[in-house]
Length: 294
Image 1 (cartoon, one colour):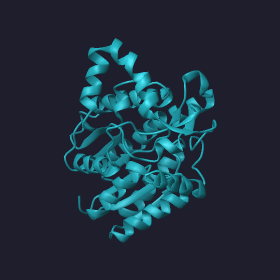
Image 2 (spheres, helix red, strand yellow):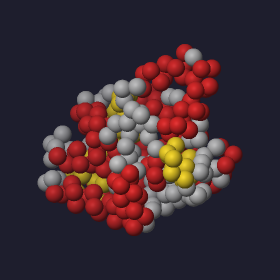
Image 3 (cartoon, helix red, strand yellow):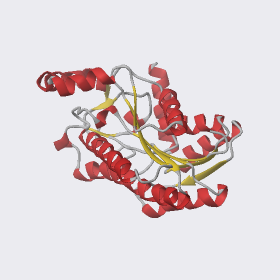
Image 4 (cartoon, helix red, strand yellow):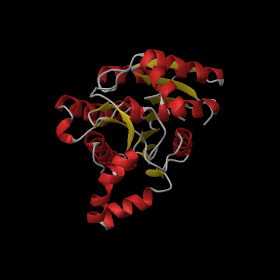
């Protein structure tokens, strides 16, 4: 999408980072936003190395004024806002009764209410200019339920409903599109960075896709908008089991999560990056630990 202006919120790692790099390779003008100034600066430099004009804006999507500032700076710098990709999310592992209420609430605030804030800002801009594509990073967990991830699952189910409602309400605007790209398990830092009250670090259960595969789907969706795009070879099978054989699904999903969704590595209860980005040193240590295990 040459010459397009693209905002990516949640650009500091994972699918957001991969998406920013994918758009940078097309020559898009980028506005990357996230909470971590250090990590965001690294991504911005990587995009500039690919030849893309980049504006980095430190912003927390739970703060409406910060999201509004992202849009304002994008328009000031580049004159228009063509695509907004929202991938910012946090996660918490643990039984519902073990996850502190304030942690559960903050996950929902970030993942669902932050998404609603982005919609308000992005759609206002798109209405003013008559066009635009809003793409949300969803999840298979917006269509099925797994134990030990209740706050994240609630948020992603809510996000799916929000996107469907937004699509219905923008049918009067042919140039405005609201899309959802929903992957299965993806190899990103969200599992290690998540709040944890399960006693063991979370991990993506197989089959696991790379964030670049999801970013490629987002790029295709920006070029040819589609309502919902699913990424993941096993997604259909898992959804079928959830809907068609709920009793069997519920009997199996707990043991499977304990085997494949939680690592063998023990961890004391902690809030991860739910309330604030992890210090750069902690992020580096987590990446080094992961590399060593491989």
